[in-house]
Image 1 (cartoon, one colour):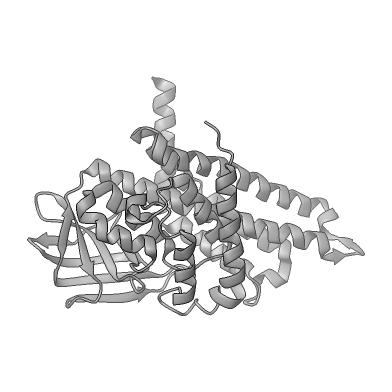
Image 2 (tube, rainbow, N blue to C red; image 1 turned 45 degrees about the vertical axis):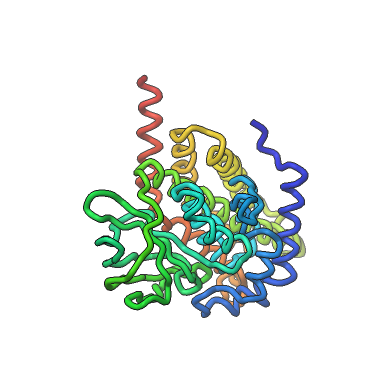
Length: 361
């Protein structure tokens, strides 16, 4: 298993990085979008679609790139580094994987084509927690902490009908759908409570618990790649600052205490990188048990990545606490990742149980 990026993956990374720097930088796009519930603009979303980023996981026969989760992780890492606030993870990863994993191709074709060309923005949930109820083709209940619902034209809903779980497609503007934004720690991530009051829905599939578990793993792994990008970016900002900020007529990076903080950040980021790269590989190439363990490990490590941003702010000193500086946005992005899918504690417990089982067997 070679986890080094190929030439094609490096080219994809560089292309996405250049686009974000030119069209969706923190100053020109991210900060103006902090108060916008959609998190994106027509120009930026269309640009990502033109690059093929929205269709990276869509099969080629539906207009996508037909790539793997490793390539999706390359894109996610760049979006995390740029603190991109748009619905890419919800659409290009969560929805694309839901449709390709759970839905027969003929029923998924039109939606997948829309994801690939950027004309369809979608989100999917709930991945964990209580589900709405389904009565025939009618949905009742609500989904909390649903990402990017204000930007989505299609909501893919996992709902229970008393006998099985179904995946339903709903027009977000349909009668009976209400979308309420939730305030939370990370303004670059848009979360919503979506309520369904006798909403007509199209049943796309009746997925098994194993299939749904695979989707949850994929989403956790992609979010971990995004968090890795954010942690890497804020670490690099802090290291560059330590090279030029001077105290007592010398760079603060020459002081041992600051050096130790930079080394701690680097160690944490590189440990996370190996785990994320392995998890991305398992999403397509490994058995379900190995994939699930890799996803759980990536999530269990989430709090450590938030600690990277916390340490970076200590390196920045007083300026790192100001609204004008970007460090706090990186910290909030990583705190949001720590909270995503529940706290790290239960994932750490799952890793511990697996280790104990492996040792005792």
